[in-house]
Image 1 (cartoon, one colour):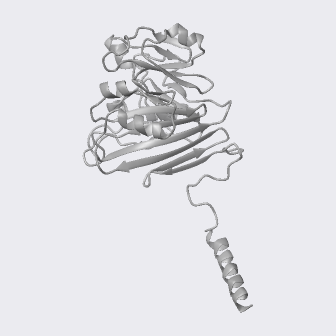
Image 2 (image 1 turned 90 degrees about the vertical axis):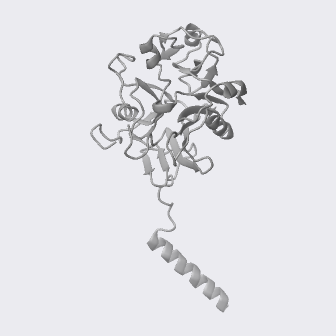
Image 3 (image 1 turned 135 degrees about the vertical axis):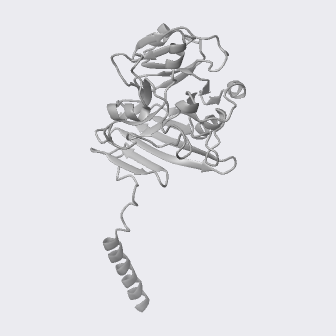
Length: 320
């Protein structure tokens, strides 16, 4: 009897402590209670913890969880952004700096600024096709919001970038193709919204593009890649590079393997190097250079690959 009384008193004391200390509540930064579909019934939740490398967002149609990952040998830092979109909501798509003149000569800006102007929740860099347009070399098949901007491409297996294609559809489907597998008109006939051209494609139908991984992008560099597990479930990944003592960078196989481990059935390599960028709630969360050395942001670009909109982003005048 005495033992039962002691156990009851212990339980009572713990309950009181939990009530007054808040230990029974969800830990700071964890998602609030979500509905059966995995979203909020209304409103938005934002959590940003750059020190620990954790960022979260959820609304009634979008859920995002980002982790900064690290390894010691070789030293690497990369970002894994997992994305869930509600059925019928806006899916990942290309977002311009200026929708009235998508690739106008003076219409480029830094990715984080494009996010702030458009209220984009999460974005990574694009295919940076603008440089090929400016240099008047083969651009690849480029479609933005159903408009063809370039039709000329390379034969399959051409030099880097081989101009493979990532096709984005309004229903959230992502498909990857060899550079000349389809014409621009055939993409439009299929109902495509955007087509990016850079490559190579990394994963198709769950299978790795091993020949391309052996041929292209073997140098140590910053990298950006995207993948789809299924419609409505995606990964954006960005690898830092050329940062001595912080992150060496790697070949395109590094992120390809990570995306396959996450279950991506489709994956594509975007432009790398100084173009690389990942932006959350208007702040670039990756590091481009060593502290106090060189530019802080990814290159100016005409568009970004983004998902979600919010009124909670900072203004253009707020700190980087």
